[in-house]
Image (tube, rainbow, N blue to C red; front, top):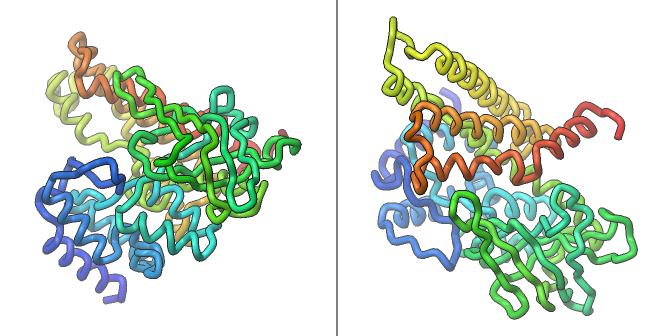
Length: 384
């Protein structure tokens, strides 16, 4: 047996002994927000045990709250968790977006301050990127940060800010050189949400929920110690964060952007019946088969990306996963509602809410049109 085999057996045994029954299968997952109170005992127990072992962020260095797992060990952990349907103990913008970005670009002080709090589930973050009039053309953003010596004064607004009403901190792109062209005058700063000058207004979306917000800055402040990367070079940091958002290691290993099709097959058998061992509706069966083939190919491509990576998030190729994954999500929910026939579109039904929510999947996190442009330029090398 290899050392990795030993690690797998040890991990399997530890998970069996320490993952509570109530932390397996669907259920609540902590995101670290101080504004959300989790009362489920098994969820809290699972978080405590994983935090103590350094497995809320397993592949982060021990100095920042992780356990320093290698890429191969991290893959094993995720596979073993998936085998018993164990939910993540912690899942947040902190673990998937700003955390990995600070590991690459942050100062030692920033890492010790912010990463350790993320790992301990003591803070949740939100993303200050899009603005009214600056969405797909993000580089045209106008929120300004004026240098005041040891801090910046920030004025402007961000929109479609997921989870801002629950966030403790924001990572934000701001304009610090007002005369430079687009990307050249942008900086990447961190700022606390609980301060005078920050106002959050929820936006009600098509599904009837308010997961998005508009955030207004009226002389809000960000410390100079929370400038990530060099002044006016925030575009470099911001682009790398988007790659973490679109396809971090956990998403690649777990197939997070795709959706399991087994449940669709079972539902279709119940809805349309079975003839000669196959789903009776031939037209629906063909569409479901096409989806399943594409979904499996997508997952295999994600696995290959993990094997070819150095343990971190791939580069511009992550745009492939955003394009294909978001379209697969939409197809999944289209099929799910189609098999319910005229009863599908009942207001307030959870499946309908999910269908409505995923209409935006090809827009948020960078529209698929933008992703295809990135692929054309950065992967295929086509001219502008």
